[in-house]
Length: 250
Image 1 (cartoon, rainbow, N blue to C red):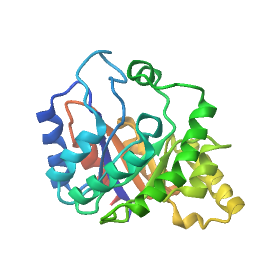
Image 2: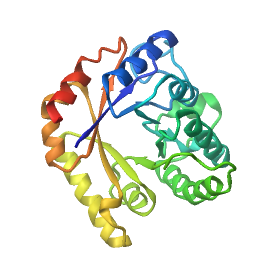
Image 3: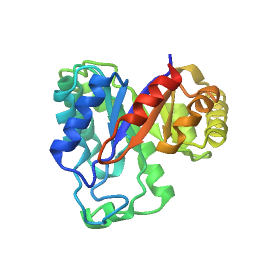
Image 4: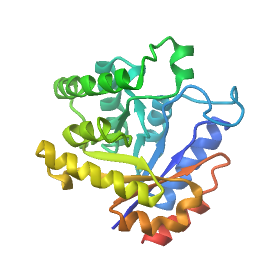
């Protein structure tokens, strides 16, 4: 069965509003609920309301009962990697083992500039992501107690030369954008990288990120190989699109 998730944008809203949205989504029966890892709004009023992703995940873990949870995706450059592993393990326990550990190389320059991180280049950020993954696995293996759930590592991105190779080598799940023909092509490139590095392609869950206008082509993503469709939902957090997506693929 195709899984359905939503990403709640943590911008231009109040805490009460986004909490009500994830509770309603969990009651609706979505398979996953996500937010993002930025420090400022990505669109709309540049200095509008915005909340930090990991703290939201901790609250979400306590507030929900059924859906899996995660960041789409966490930026590996924003936190010490060993600390990140410990944060993820702790949130995984709060959720009862429902956490995805979503990671990516990062791209939003304002986050880096205003919080004092080195922005570098796309190549250096990808190198940092690749270097972080073995360290992350080591720390997760050393934590006491360990994660209570499977804590799958999801990598986000569609770069064909580096990101998809890293995904083939390390990830348990992968996400990128459409439209469906683009997503299909990226999925095929990931399959080729799996063959190149000796990885079973079936070991990597294939997820697709949908904009609200793409609900009507949800079946095209599924036909392209997507196993898990994640719909972007902005404030005021109308879940009508999620209801339509659930009906379309189930």
